[in-house]
Amino acid sequence: MKNTGKVIEAMIDYYGKDLKRINHFLKVFSFAKTIGEGENLDSESQNLLEVSAVVHDIGIKISEKKYNSSAGKYQEIEGPAQAEKLLSDLGYDREFIQKVCYIVGHHHTYTNIDTKPYQVLVEADFLVNLFEDGASVKAAQTAEEKIFKTETGIKLLKKMYLS
Image (cartoon, rainbow, N blue to C red; front, top):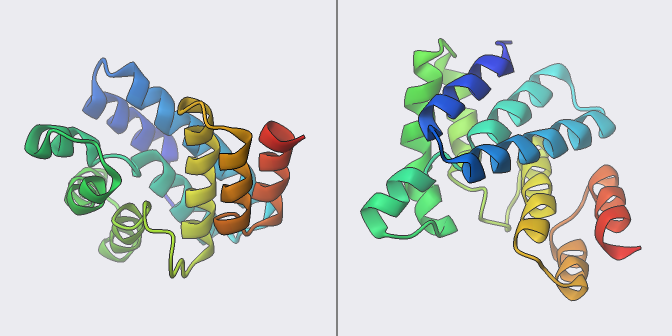
């Protein structure tokens, strides 16, 4: 297990002065850490979750340049290669990087979520995006019905948006 702080520093370097993106990934990281701990993930899954949360939107910069869009589908296309380079440079092993890249390459795909770290990351990203997008109560209710599966994620969603 590596130091997640080094990944955060590398992502701050990557985004430079793009404070909106930096603050977004830090908020997602915080919620992911909280939900993962609340769900009692084992240390390997928790580490995978936390690193994935930090780099989940790494594809945005390339997507905006290449497609003039930050749409989720473009992030999923462009993000894995960027995440692989950043994590390789930090000394992460290939198997771990592949797991992170899978999550990064699917974090806007809400069907066939097949691991707890992937599920928790999606929930954490939703908690942040609901706020950042100024979403309605109805949108939060729909997310609860269609997206949220973990007890901790549902509890946070209800406390923040539905009570």
